[in-house]
View 1 (cartoon, rainbow, N blue to C red):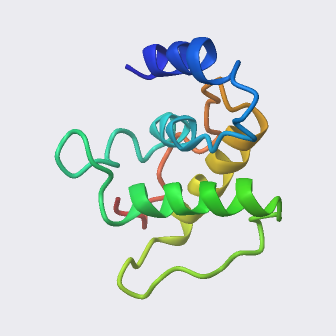
View 2 (view 1 turned 120 degrees about the vertical axis):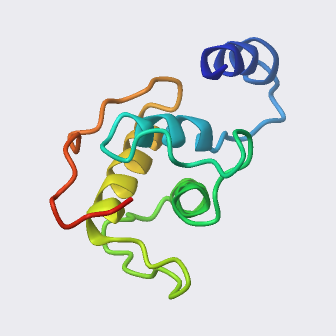
Length: 118
């Protein structure tokens, strides 16, 4: 599905001059799936879960729109309680998606720390 979306985007959307930029949320999500978090970002098979999925999407929007570095962002809503190890993964994957929006990048975090529950 990801490859079909990227292909359609490149063929139909990217050539349009009125499109100023693209926010690579799909690529960020795919990048996270290469980490120890795996395929746990959806709540029903289609929609992003209310925790890591939406946080990843939001951080991607923030990073792409503002152009600011996301490394120093420490804010996580109290209701999300994202473990620090997962936050590292999300930031790595978002940065890689912004750098390479049409390419899945393997996460360096493939093994969960023993104290991390996803």
